[in-house]
Amino acid sequence: MISSYARHGFGEDAMQLFVLSLREDFRPTEFTLSSVVSSTTDLPVECGSQVHSLAIKLGFESDAVVGSSLIDMYSKFGSVDSAMKIFVDMEIKDLISWNTIIMGLSHNGRLAQTLDMFNELLKYGPYPDQVTLAGVLLACNYGGFVDEGMIIFSSMKEVYGVIPGDEHYVCIIDLLCRAGKLREATDVIKTMPYEPSYLIWESILRACAIYGDLKLLENVAERMMDLQPESLLPYLLLAQAYEMRGRWEGVVRVRKAMRQKGVVKKVTGCSWIGIRNHLYTFNAEQLQHHGGKEIYLFLRLLIWEMEDEGCVYLQHDKLDAAGE
Image (cartoon, rainbow, N blue to C red; front, side):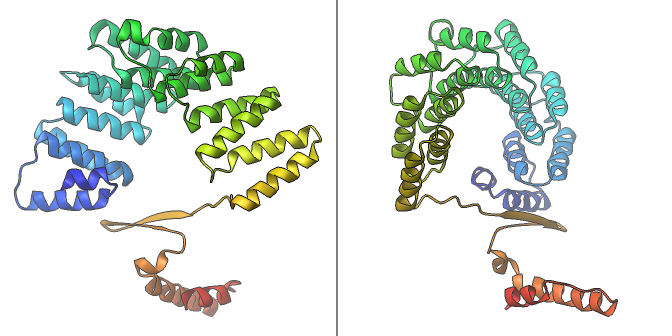
């Protein structure tokens, strides 16, 4: 149950169930702690620290399963040094542990350190897999390491026995596009054994917008519109390219197509608040599901006290309307 809650984003429910199990004197195993740690990434960092303290108390900190979960947790919180310390102190480091720290370093901008960790893995660790190479190529992409990225990508199948997947193609094509090597990026696409994904075409589209290949930009934008008709990006970049060249009929045509297909940018606000031991999350227009009437009643009481003190609340009418 704890694992299911954690996998589906119900971190608070997983934590509450874990606390109940402790009250019933159930001793957690390494798999229990790993699932609980995974659930804390959506909760305040204090929750993760408390579970970490319990893992130390129970003697599980050096366990490969728990250690990998802790590394992932601290990496997602941005505490890379804490993640690195746990990795170094682990007695047994399996490939999951190596992959987790490599991904954590990449996502937190420790790009040169990611490559150093990969070289250390090649010397002392298990053989890398597709996840390892995806993390290293991601670091090359973020860091602009074109030569290193191309060497790793070109040797994936022959040296490491890994057939490049979409996550690897996305990294290497985006790396080439960022470096202005649009021709090389399109050459890589031609070697793909399957149709490129939306993310791959997005990298090409952005490069076309920067380096001025209008014909290619039009073709790529059409492919992206077919793959994700609701996406706003190809329409915007295409209209911008037409506008920069003074082709106003093209701008009008793109805007007309956007209206006909109902392509509208929609942003949904999201908030969360912790009250005592409970975490409330809700999207915009969802406040009524979380005791909204009581919240507005309390706000009115605060406003009345403010008015008694001589303060003026300019949006009082809006609040009344929302509360009703």
